[in-house]
Image (cartoon, rainbow, N blue to C red; front, side):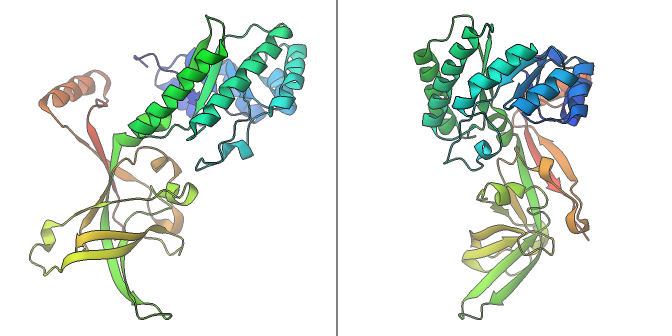
Amino acid sequence: MQLGVGFDCASVEEMHTVLSLGADPGSIIFANPCKAPEALAFAYNVGVRRTTFDNLDELDSINKYMPNAQLMLRIFANDNSALVALGDKYGAPLESTQALLVRAKRLRSGASDPAVIRKAVEHSRVVWDIAESLGFSLRIVDIGGGFQSTESAFEKMAVAVSSAISEAAFPEQTTFIAEPGRFYARSAFTLVCKIIARRVSTTIESSKTLEMLYQNDGIYGNFMNGLIEKEEFMPTLIRSKLNTTMARKTGNHTYKIWGPTCDSTDCVSRSTTFGCEVKIGDFLVYKNMGAYTSVTATNFNGFSNQTGTIYICSSPQDFTQIEESSSEEGTCSPMSTTFRVPTVEL
């Protein structure tokens, strides 16, 4: 908040959490195009004024439960190459925007393909002109989120956005905002899992031997994104000190890695190769696990979704900053490395 960032909230709980941390209601956008009446009323009562819409029914609900809202029209801009096609669920087609703006006037009330972002900005300029012709005074263009978390991919997207905005020639005082949450959060956490079991299986169809590992976290915990977005996880092996006296085979070993539940879909990796044999009690380290991990965790099969959090300082300067931050606000400097360690089920 001290850096002047805003907050994209999708629910009452998210708004409540952000407000409890001292955020100004004016820094919040209730960015869910289809909201329950109770959620709209909550936003209105706590002073949140900005919200999104993409259909006529939503406009009517906003007018009734969140009057005088500052509206942001969400335009359809589906990216077929994206891991999750949000365009299937939200976004007003370009041809429907004029009807929506006419109704709004009466009431007074993401992505991996740079070409898609460019097209979305172009459509935004078209809608902007339509809105101005109807008497609206527009100020903000929100280009949304879904940005890939690697620096190279983010830079490509940033160049495309900057170029598209320049070519669209929006009025000079236009404010542009974006939602790069995944980009900021992903590298903040590293997940450490413990190998709790293993087995060797021979398939019926062939005599090929399959080596399998079972760890204490899976798709019902911090790995749900492997199921939703088909993310491929590439762990690093840390051999347990408790296993130093045990014989360990050398050479490459390829494993199928399972989560702890009884569900056969709870598979973290179908093929991961390590430079030696993996033993029960060893640890697997997964980097870049800060986005869409713990927030989707469940207690399926009775396994805990709680993880211990360990903050690791990478330099003396970081440690000093953490000490100062902890004494003043009870928080940890974002410059530190953070490890999540799932609970081990006995």
